[in-house]
Image 1 (cartoon, helix red, strand yellow):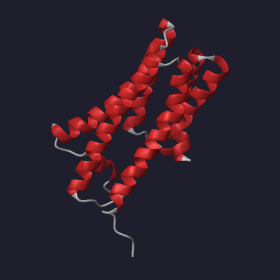
Image 2: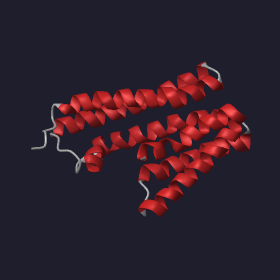
Image 3: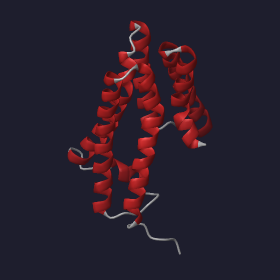
Length: 177
């Protein structure tokens, strides 16, 4: 259920794009993200900082897309979000000497420092590459191809990456007795 909720705005963006075009899809994504945050606040009583960041980025870049009637802004949105996430992990590691992934997930799994560091660097690199890949698709192909990539390519690459992370981390995880 949580996975569906996380991808709710992206899926609605995709459907709205196929039915009504990029500007309607952008408006739908903004409304869906606001509804998503509202639902989480009511249901869980809190919202993750990443969800607030995502809301801010979609409102800013989606709003610019609608106001300027220029789809370039919405095409930059995934890259900005990826780079903000990667940048946060990088700043946390290098400047604050804190592994944010460990802070988020340390209660769920016990890993040696080396594995946490590797995971942090891997996610940082993944976010940088995804941001670059998004820009390449946005500027090298038509909007329809970009929207398809945003949904299927982005989610597919994320799934492959997460499976790779799981395989790497499996050697460090102990089986429950």
